[in-house]
Length: 130
Image (tube, rainbow, N blue to C red):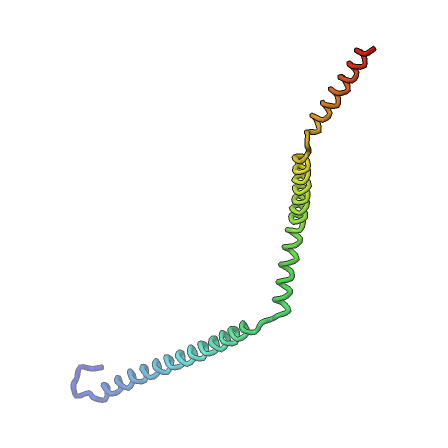
């Protein structure tokens, strides 16, 4: 472009060239925005479909999962429960034996010692009478 102020033709050509370049840039930007909008809309639709699928319960799978968890829990805790039950029975038997033992009029060992003393006393009396 020359420095001559009367050269309007070159200036108009330069402005038209800049306008064409700006128009091309605006068209590219518009296309990019349109593509971005379409991609965003598609992603939102996919997300919406996924969210709507979440609300639909797959009951057979849920019940199957619950039954699997229950069966694994029973298999893992079953032996422990059986052992606890056996321990409770043994504890009850021991408690009953202790109560029965406490209700005796005399301790069994003392009763045996008394029998032995009575036998010896009887034996000594029999020797003394002979």
